[in-house]
Length: 469
Image (cartoon, rainbow, N blue to C red):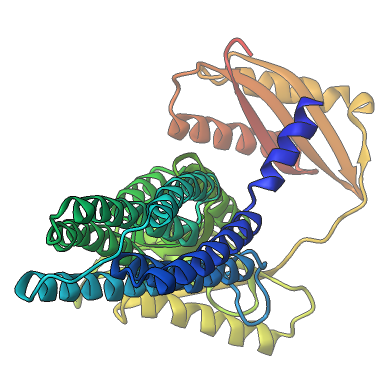
């Protein structure tokens, strides 16, 4: 029941409904004020009536704006229609400026000229009192709804009604003072109110222009830059562009990461950036572009990245870079393996190798020699688990592994047969602080020893686990 009531309250305070109610009330007030002003020849009341007539146009624009701004994005407006509110808010600022200018000119004319004769019947004062109360209530209602929905158009309408309270009170005080014999008090009060209205209009207009001109919110920009730079896998945040439209914040972010990361990994990094930004800017619409970085790349990484750019290459591995001293100076010799689709002819494979070598030379320079080995991508090969039948291989692998000082135990060995060839996977444990280099060297020695004992074993994988797991 409580949720249903809250939902009804939320609907009753929707921007469109609030704007429509304000439009109807403004129309009634405008008609009443104009009628009384014409009947009494009161300039104060006529000014108030004209101000209310301007409000009628302004709130009509607000109603139109919130209807347009509430529409979802479409084929012609990819970022939605929220800026309609800012456009109307700016228009209202101009209307406020016109009203302020008119008040200042009229006040100056009255102060410089002869005193005007003004009739002040009781019902004129009653209308101004009622107008001030109604405008105060409308301003508070519109401002509350504007804050709840982030509506600049309703905020502009609230500001307009708040100034109307001031002008109504000034007009009221003027009529009271006029009845007491101080006619010039009307012009002085108008100048005071005009100053406050001008300041408020300037602030509102600046806010609207900032949104319409896509001015970046500096506080949000700094937060988003820091969040993007701190995302896992990001080397640096190169460019961040932020703009707002209504309640929606849009951010275009460019980050850099390692040159050899896979497309899938790059996608994961981009999603990580979006998650980090969501912490500092919830609900923001974020687009992340991932670029490679080369400033901190090693030669091997640069070779892998360059070779992978050749069309038709699926994987680059076994990259070796040798620094050679010869009569012509210090040169580099690069060797690598590139996996491609199976079925290429010798001519096609040679041409692809040339393209790979050209890409690497373009990356490292022409004084580099590159030799590429092209091999087919492995297809899925049918095999059979023969672990239970080959206790001899298991025992031999365990003995060979335990001969390494850095290997603490060998607790699982899997043997797979494909045709006449066997493949072995051995799970071993080592100290948790042992370096990766030593692990790799131990693995190579174990593989060499196993191949020497069992020529029928092909692939050997040594899977290291930390001690205690």
